[in-house]
Image (cartoon, rainbow over all chains, first blue to last red):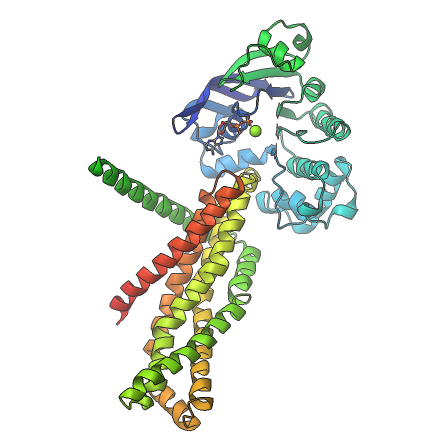
Length: 252
Length: 254
Ligand SMILES: Nc1ncnc2c1ncn2[C@@H]1O[C@H](COP(=O)(O)OP(=O)(O)O)[C@@H](O)[C@H]1O
Ligand SMILES: [Mg+2]
């Protein structure tokens, strides 16, 4: 089946405040899809609805052709094993050291023995350019960029088909951003993993995307390929890319 | 207007009871299914059973001592000093042991459970558990509830012993009771049911403290401030429930 993720008319609100107001898009196998949009536009909520961490008010989400709302908990867990997630703040487990963090999904999710899981985790750390010397370090002692890398290693440890990146480069310096972007490109292009990334960083968007969707006011208001970005005359996209304070986005 | 706000309050109360019940049911059902997280259970057992000992022991010692002094003031007026050992014993085992232990544990452990789980909630670590295919109720909540229910009675037992010992120290060394008589009076008035009922209370309180600690952790949102608020709510609500249930259990058990 050609699509790994199909989202249709997704709606969600917190209390009376609508956050998503009918979002639809599809991600093909092997595609790197980037969602952009202002802070608070509901990008993280969208990702959590797809992963069934939040139950949306309306709309359907299909992962690998299966409607996630109809899956049993057990089936959902096995679907989630095929999804790697890099959270906005890394979301590393504070009480566990780096190697236990990276091997967590392998040990507790896949039921692998600790020894094999550690070996795989070491390889994953290497894949994100981290050496064995940080294996016993706790997350609190790591810098922001290292945390993101460890979190990335944990996200790819279970060998997922789809990876979700929630603002992978926010708060990092330009060089570290470049490094993380390269790692993401390596995951998607070389390992053939499909990806849904969320970012506001225009430079990284250009580097990592095949397709870009712009979310605004709870709706996907523009969708286009990486190449369309430079040629489009959509005023929202232009303003987002140029970062100009004047334009159709209304700042409240 | 008044009726509306009362109605809203009642609905809010009922819905939070409903939510709590669902939380509890899910935690226990998934917790009891095989593949236990032994390591988590063990860690929590050590936290509750071992690291709480100093606080609980100290509370018990001072309470036992103060209790004996106060009893002396009262009982010497009616020349009933000889009843002091058995009164201290009954008060410690039936009432003060379980209640004080539970309150101390609510402050020490209930609070830290809420803070820990709440922080995990607001920093998306609980979401991360889920997307790594681990049930967070099974991994975080069940081990805490199990360890609390099993190990709080153990703490109560220690509390009883140290409290009675505190009473003995004051009685014999300060009030100059005859040591042999004091011990004899304590032991002869002791019944198994006094101790057992205290332990039953302890198990119930341990359950309450851990359930409330975890539940409020899951409720936290909106950053550090939310976690702080959840922690306060957790300690306050479990303390009130401990005192309320103590009253109810005392009616039921005796
Ligand atoms: N758990 C929640 N409860 C209430 N409101 C929320 C919650 N999570 C997110 N929101 C609100 O939803 C909106 C979108 O949030 P989010 O998806 O995190 O934005 P972003 O696009 O920056 O990732 C925000 O206005 C936020 O306040
Ligand atoms: Mg976000």
